[in-house]
Length: 247
Ligand code: NAI
Image 1 (cartoon, rainbow, N blue to C red):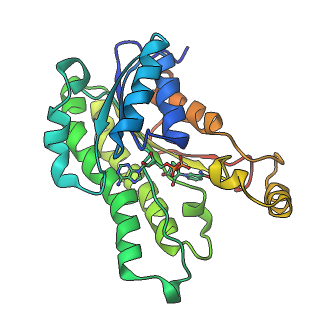
Image 2 (image 1 turned 180 degrees about the vertical axis):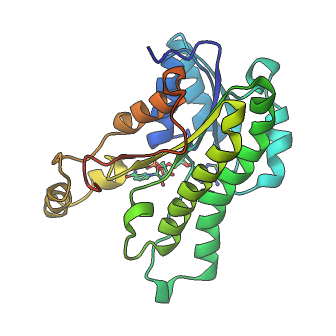
């Protein structure tokens, strides 16, 4: 079940956190994985770690806020990594502030990285997927894109935008056997949440039905499922991985 042998995946924002966990899990299930982010050094050690564990990975320095570089960057991949079957648009940033204090630059930076990056990279890889009549695109949104969040108007707009983008693309590409889905994580254990004071942590977990924060592996498992052959009849779906924070 959920084997990805003979598939090539590209995961953006793979240098740490959720993207790293997704890359490791897809590789464990047999995919060749292109690990992409801006920091090539971190990516090299992740690719070496995956290779050492019997997987197959290749680092790719890619800034998702620079779509004009995508074509040349993807062409730099060796032939056996060149045909992307599974695209995971995971890279994302925040620049939080209340609207009254949010600069146009903070608005545009977040939209450009989180939403425009996914648009442009999807556009770049679907040609090959259409030709091969098989493809999986999984976009990483956030429950904040469904619920809204004070102080995150830019981030929530970008993540809600990803959901509309996903549903439209699912309708466009379904006839070519390409599925497009979105995963919306809730609060996930990361370096940021680790440093929260105990009281804030308790308040946070109190609002979650399952009474715990999520792990990067919880999110990776959902992405793996949507990327698999077994999920071939699921498209345009937004899967919230929030422990019941948003129901
Ligand atoms: P993180 O900050 O630990 O990692 C983000 C990754 O994106 C890093 O690899 C970073 O290098 C990469 N990245 C940022 N800007 C980039 C750019 N311009 N080009 C290429 N790569 C870039 O974040 P985390 O927590 O792992 O989040 C991953 C995704 O999950 C993001 O889209 C985030 O919005 C989403 N998410 C995270 C949640 C959480 O609680 N951590 C909750 C809901 C959604």
